[in-house]
Each structure stands twice: as structure tokens, then as C-alpha cells.
Image 1 (cartoon, rainbow, N blue to C red):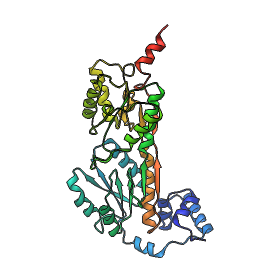
Image 2 (spheres, rainbow, N blue to C red):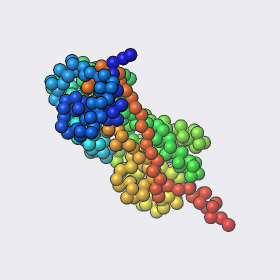
Image 3 (cartoon, rainbow, N blue to C red):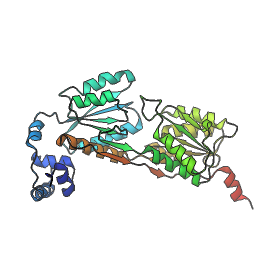
Image 4 (cartoon, helix red, strand yellow):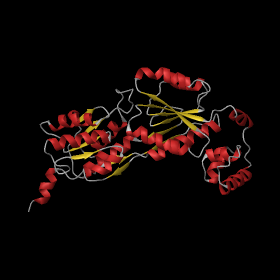
Length: 343
């Protein structure tokens, strides 16, 4: 029978690994009831902390690092907020390493893997190269990927394929046959990489008998201006789409603007779907896919603190899917509306 781990204690006690660690270190911020419950589970399982790991703890900085691109995007701001909330009850503080340009990348990774800066790193929406993963490993720095994946590295992965699939399936269920996709790069520094949203769109088109003609698939920047210019191209086609699904709510806002300037009514003349569910989406009544930023931040922090507490533990990967949020910007296509209104 294998020796019980701190993760086993956390699971049996119904708390996070960080809470167990604080109990072991006599942190007074843990309530008496929680402390007693964890202590009882420790007694029942016969758990004993790894002395080497406890010795290593005294040399820690109690700081977690976050490496992410383009800090001003809504997605990153929300995930960072949830990460900060997740570490608030723990002894850890947060250091942010942001990438504004691709040229910053080697220097940033070299800096954040230098000994003494952080105890572990959360890497958000960056597709790591073999060289970069080797750099983290040579620095003996635990890392957790968020919204990306690498074989043998722990991470919380957003299921963009099935999230996008349900968006297109929703439009198809309303009767749309001409559905366009205005997407954005999944990795800001790898714009040539086809996003999983793209694959989800194509799969849904195949399953629902839609024709994904090349002219209906556009790639643009993560901005309202990009969404607007893409929509103008699509709506100028001889046979324009009756629905447009975008890879971000910001792009969807641009599509709404283009439709309004052309005198189109949403959703009577054109259905529009976003992706993310930023705060403004509810205000404008945008149908979208809500990304679980709360779950992403919490799970990533739990994974990383576990890796720090249990050096050498097996990598863990979790996948989470977005939720369809139906509002007022989607409806049946014009052809079905006319058919329904006919006497």
C-alpha cells in the first residue's frame, strides 16, 4: 500500500492542498474546525510530511509567478483576478511576468526561472516550446499551464473545440445554414496555429450539414475593429451568412456595429454570437459562450501548490468546457421567419 500523500489528506478532509499545508505549519488563519478536521484525517491516514520537502520549504519565497501575454485582454484580467482570490487564503503572494512582444519572450522566461524569484509558475495561453519546457525543468521550477497544453506538464485546458461546437450547434438548431466564423489566434505569439475553436466550428458544420465555405472563415485580431472589418467583408459577399460566430466578445461587438451601420436588425436579419461572456456582453444582450474563469484560476492554483508541496508528483491535466448563454442576439434566419409568418 502506498504512503498517503498531502493530496490524499486534502481530498478526505474536503479542503485544498494549501489548507493542509497551512495546518502542518500551524498557520493561525485556518479556523479551529477546519484544523481539527484536517488533523483527524492526518491521524486516520497515518500521513507524515516529507522531511526533505519540509526542509526545502524554509528556502522558499512563498511567491507564485504568472507568465502571460497581452495583459490588457479581458480574459487575462479575469483569470488573474480569480488567481489572486484563490491564493488570498494561502501564504503565497503573486508576481506577474507579462509579454507584450514576442521579442520579450526569451528574456522573460530566463528572468522568471532564475533561482530565488518564485516557487512555481502559472503559464497562461502560451504554447511552450521544447526548449522553454526544458528551461523550467532545469531550473527545477514546478509549472502549471492554463489554457494550453504540453505532454507531461500539468495544466488546466479550456476545451475550445467543444465550446465552439455547442455555439455552432445552437445556431444550426435555430435553422441557420450559412454560419460564418470570425476567429482570433489562440496563442497571441503563434498566430499561424489553427485554434481549437476553428476545429469545433468545422466539426459542427459537418455534423449539422452546414457548408463551411472558405469565405465564411476569417481570422482577425482580438479587437472590436477586427470584428467590424471582418463582418463588413462577410456581409458584402453575394450570399452573406445569416449568422456570425466570433472567437471573442470584443469581435462580436464589432460585428454588431457593422450590422447596425448597414441597417440590419439583430437577430431578425443577422444572428451574432460571441465567446467569453465579458461583463459588457450581458449589457448588450449578446448570446455567447461563458468561459469558466473562476474554475480555471482556482484549479490552476491548487495544481501548482500541490506540485510545490509534493515535488516529483505525477502531472495532472484537467479540461473544462464553456457554457452556452442564450440572449437576444440570436434567432431564426430570415427565411424561416418569413415562412412562419405566412398565412
